Structures are given as C-alpha cells and as structure tokens.
Length: 307
Image 1 (cartoon, rainbow, N blue to C red):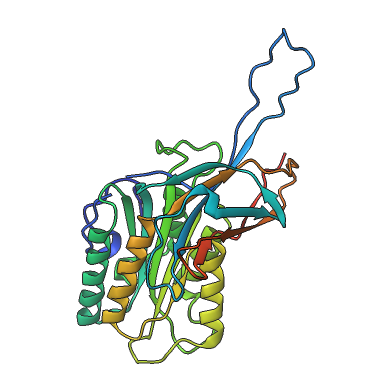
Image 2 (cartoon, one colour):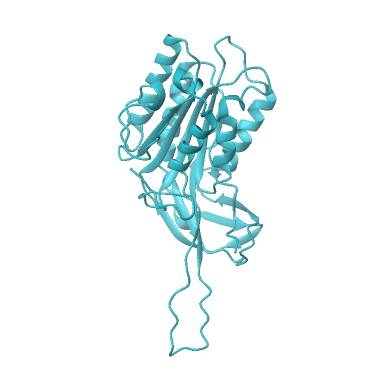
C-alpha cells in the first residue's frame, strides 16, 4: 500500500473524503554550528537549538478561541525553568494534516461521519496537505502486510533523519483520529490505531486530536480507554473528545478546525544545552486581563537531541 504525503483528492482505502491541502511544523529543531571566524579566535559557536511550540488558547470552558493575545501574555517553562521567548507568531499556517478513521462498516453511519469529515476539511486551511487512512476498508483488513501499511503511512507523515520527503521539515503537523471505542479496555489499541497514536506522540512534532465514538452497538468507551486517549492527545497539545452523536461530533470537529487555524507559535532556545536525548517537560502559561482563567493547550514536552 502506497501513501502519498501530498495533495489527495480522495480518501485512501475507501473512505471518500474530499481533501484539498499544503505544509509547515512543530518540534525541537537542531541547527548546525556556524562557520568559524578567524578574526575572533576566542569565540565559541556551539550551535543554537530552537524549540517551537504551537499553542491554542481558549476561554474558560473551552467555548471560544482566544486570538488577541500578545507575546507578553505568555510564559514558557522547561523543566520548571523560565525560558526567553524569542519567536512569536499568530497566523493561519497550512498544516500537514492526517485524518484517521475506524468507524465501522454500517453504510449510513459511515456516510454521516464522512459528511462530518468533509465539513472539517472545508473549515480548515485550504492549503493543508492531507492524508486519509481508513482502518475499516476491507482491502486494508485483508492486507497481510497490515503493519507494513501503517509503517508506510507513518513514514509519509513523520520526518525521519536522513530521509528526504521533499516537504519543508518545519511544516506544522496535526492528526485527527475519529474512532469507535468499545466498552472493552483493549479494544482501542486493536487495528493499529493505538500503536499509531503512540508513535505520533513520541515524534515531538505532531498534535493529536481524538474523537472517541460509541461503537455501533451503542457501548460507551471504558474509563481506561478514555483516560489513555486523553493522555496521548493532551501530551501533544491536542485534546480528546467523546461525543454521543454525529451532530455533537460535527460541532467538535468545527471547533478543532478553528483552533488549528488560530494557534500561536512560541519559540525559545533552551537554557539546558545538553544533548542527552532526555525528555524535557514544557509548561506554557497565559496572563490576560481580558480573559479569566484561559485554557492553554500546548505540547507537554519533547525529547532533546542526542549526540
């Protein structure tokens, strides 16, 4: 199965979603050392690492996106240490966007969710570059190279050192997962979706939004599944939702599309210069006289480069 990380006109593997989409991204970016200057023999250039964080801010309760903040409204902490914000942007940036589905095979249900997905795409930046992966397609279920298929999809979306995808490595990335979640604790990881989400959360540069639906038999998601999905999404700066109906799902995906188009990008050069591959915890706080207790969503950390 071949997955193309470029403009897609129909969904892969039978989920017919009209897709129009372009790129940019979110992660710790290691920049190489600059050229030596012979006239300044005592100047040591050790290289600069810039950590970029997409941040969405919402009013208390999450009903509204807050889009009028200034750089001075934000504080960033890495492992509890305040960082100097050197990059601040607030603009509608095209994304590399992934839509992942496992919604069952009932035709009417799939059509309703397909309609929701189309609305999400229409609400999103028209320059997004989007892939669609449908775990319910019969051709995918019967594919003996199931795990290999997931691997190909991941490689088309996530930057791997030494591999040239032809896409700007700084492209922001996001994934929207819409999946049935049964009342059995081990149901969500089946079909590779749990593995896929775990992979994305470790990539440093993908924001995950997840919508866990009641299954076709009407069973609600087990508490353990809800907690696990929420944990993964929130770690990346996204959020998990558990709508009770397709109408509620439509409202949620509309809010997600709006949030993705109204994110702030904060950047800083970490005060901890060690390249030891360890996990660095990030906390972003917002102070505003205009908004009472705003909700901040940002990735919770990243893995430092390792040398």
